[in-house]
Structures are given as C-alpha cells and as structure tokens.
Length: 216
Image 1 (tube, rainbow, N blue to C red):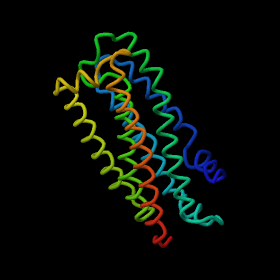
Image 2: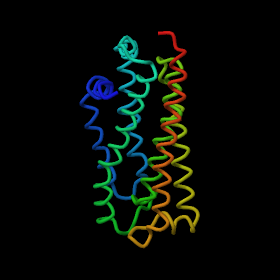
Image 3: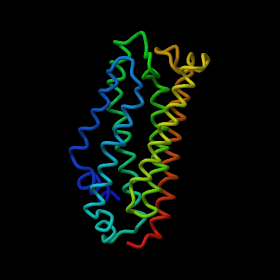
Image 4: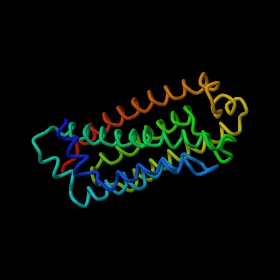
C-alpha cells in the first residue's frame, strides 16, 4: 500500500497540483463565501488529475501491476482524502489571520471557525461518496460523476450557509468567533471529522466493489 500511495503522489498528482493548496489564501478575502475556496480543489486538482490519468491510461497501467484491484482503489481513495486534508490544514493559518483582522465577521457567509471546518470536511466526504463510486463504475467516465459531486456539494454548502445565516439560534451557536463559542462549534467539527471518515470509507467500499466488475 505504501508503494501504491507513492505512485499516486508521484505520478497521478502532478507536482504543480500542490500549488493549488494555496487556495486556502482565499480565506483572506473580506466578506466572501469561503466554502468556494475549498471547491477549487475539486475543479483544479481532481478534475484535471483524473482527466490526465485517463489520457495516460493510468488505471490500465496500475491494474497491470501485481496487486489486487481493491488495493488500487484504496490507494487512490487514500490519496484523494489526504489531499483534501492537506487543503484543510494549509487553510487553517489563513483562517486564523482572517479572524484576527476581520473582527466584524463575514457578511457574505460563515465565519472561518471550528464549525466551518467541520462543514468543509462534510463537503469533501460527500464529494468522495458521489464522485469516486461514479468514476469506478466504469474506471473511465469522469464528467458526469464530477458534475454530480460538485452539485451535491454546492447544494449542501448553500443549505448550510442559508441555515446558519437565516436562523438566529444557529447563527449564535455556529457562526460566532472566540473561545466562548466553542461549546456549540466543537461538536460540529468532530461530527464533520467522523462523517468525512465514514463517507470516504463507504466511497472506498462501493468503488472497490464496482471496480472488481470492470473489464479493462
């Protein structure tokens, strides 16, 4: 598994893609819907990586190696999840700077607090659940699964933003800044972590099962 992960990060994800982790700097924009900053990872990295991989017949090459099909899927799912976690981790310092400078809060969406990052992890988990099984149904078609994944994420992000900004109780509990708001926000963060792990594991199991039936 370690060698397969090396292969994913050395051959599948082009080194230039790691520059896209700097999209976390978009959190420095004042009063902006910050969920969009994390959506760029889906557009700029995953869509391009999978399209380039298809052009280079990456799946066929990897399947020719003396490893099980489900291990190939596991390595890809782990690599995608690790990239998503790297995006979240690199965005945290920019969120801290945002909160230090924009003390009046975000007028166009959620503030970059603990609950916000919990929702970001759910967004990535939902994308994994929709896109990865959709891709491994054929191990070739990318467009429709990618579009469906982005639609699901967009609907979720819009629903969360509308609920938090439109419901005073939720706004007070989940959108505040400072230590006094931790009791309401930390459970959302922990729930987001748990859902990210759960949804990604389900995505792996469904993807592996589908890939076993694909005739390459």
